[in-house]
Length: 145
Image 1 (cartoon, one colour):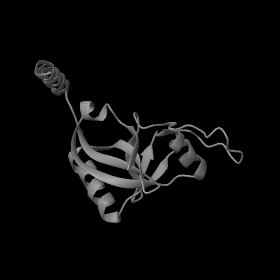
Image 2: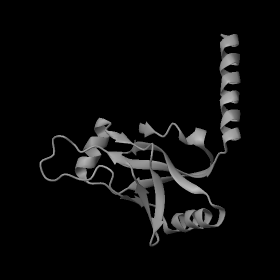
Image 3: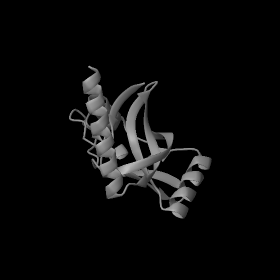
């Protein structure tokens, strides 16, 4: 498993409740661009429409050596999940006000996979508490070394 990119702000902005793995429907030039590392998942989220899951606002730079077509870099891409998983996530999002965001993008046996998470947003005091805990852990690690 080769990790391509991670959403570093996800654990700071949200409480991660559950994690799922999904495939993404891509075209060939997008896969080549992902292999080159021209991808970002920082500002994207998952939306449900018509019993299907889509990833919105994921940035994949156009592959510079393609000759066939130019795609929109932030186009909507379909996520490949089981119907049971889609129904479960859709029920959680609608009833509790939770959200689904991607955590990391990686290759698994040559296929592009995305790890998505069911998350609840943090309040400002929760973020301060996270920063304080991180500083304490850093100080303890410094003292031990």
